[in-house]
Length: 151
Ligand code: DQA
Image (cartoon, rainbow, N blue to C red; front, side):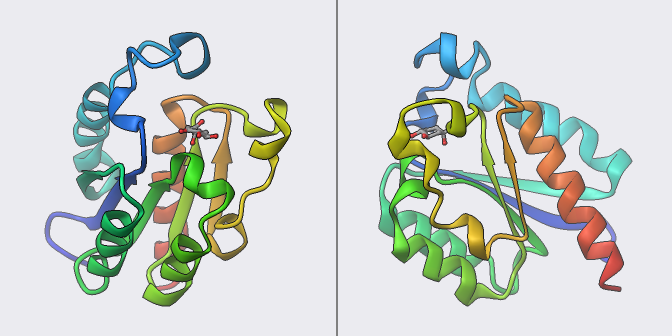
């Protein structure tokens, strides 16, 4: 166990930097920074420390996932639209040997048909869909439960 708790990397993909102003009727009023500060606040109590990364490009996200090897105990990934079609992101998730929980703020199964396919999900340790910003916390709790089981 690391002194400061388990190391969780939260990775957000394309357009999630616009949270707060982007289609608030779908994604809610909270910004990514608001989500990040809440996770930072609950970290000490739940026993994790959190690092955030957001990029709009697939390659940058793959680099961040590869960088999780040896630096993070678990990853929370909102791949944005890439979750529907990026086999490269899926391959990165299965390559790194670090458990990844996938998060989607909205209920992708209740939206356009193209959002119903999640190509990364099959190699994820778990998926949280439609819980809004709370989904990130739920995913972290899921990861912590899994990581504690493995000890
Ligand atoms: C999303 C759902 C995706 O379909 C969409 O492209 C996003 C956000 C979500 O968090 O609900 O960018 O991943």
